[in-house]
Length: 457
Image (spheres, rainbow, N blue to C red):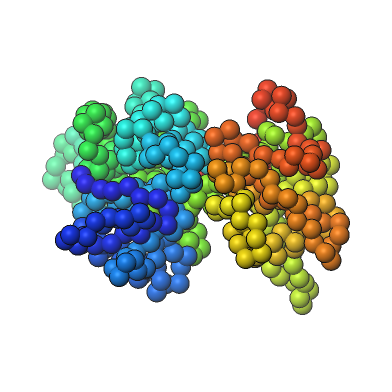
């Protein structure tokens, strides 16, 4: 099965004879490009947040992948692997980019079941889709070793011996001249339940997707275990019927992967106007989850981290609150707000300290943080913008002051993706909120307030 690997914001164009690929521009088969172009047009027409945009590169029509990572799979099986853009800035190649993405995905509640060590080892030599398939097959194999769960289901049949409850009306209609038959309704204890049907359907789909002989062999063996269970014909309906009964905890990981494989929309982007294929993930959400999980451990004693606070609004009109203010992260102690932080998945340059370049920062983000500081901190304290650390942004920028809000300061800090920690300003201005590095390494992991484990369905 053919495919290609690109990074966020790279572009794709149709193959053209004698035209080589360039940095940021890859060629794909014409039929694949036509499919991508139709997807981009559909997204633009619907007014949705685009995961794919129409573009033009070097005089060629192209489509550009937005800030999403994962796998795009065309109807003919062609695979486009999209890796985080920051990997190019920190070096390491495609293998390290896959490892980085897998580590970040584990911070999302619904993907906590990823076995990091094995997945990172495979990521260095396999495409991302094969890594996902391997994780799903491992989860199903673990489930099978624990045993498939069966359940009672109501059935009706014309039996030779009475079983269950005799359905008199149907019995007389069918067996008036057949005294050896009984039309009855009865409960059958069978593995044919929604959870098993979904896993069987997902196994069949991965068997069609994978090109790894090891994965093909394991998928066939697991499909054999599900022989008595029909594959789900209506996954959406079956996911609605899934029950977390007692003794079903070992199904969680496998079902989460099955949902990702069977559904047509990403679990992170399926709500509202944000839609994307199921194996694509918005990097803004992934980065925010990573920072939230590890920053909670970095906080000082007595402080807690709250995610996606939305208790305040920008204005009030006709006795109603308008324009909710929703900072990504809020540091609190005894129900008092102390620090507001917002994550931004963007590469900035700490060396571009000119009035025109402005480090590559966005003015709108400063307006946003100023509003957060005025409302959540009453105009007194510190607000923080967090960006991924790179070679050109490896330390805190000098503090930003608001002339008309003298009590409010804004910091721009790097978050190290390798060490999983926020780099603080050397001035020590924020040290009061964070534990010393020596204590942080031995501190237990804190769960941020409002940081919910994403349900697999």
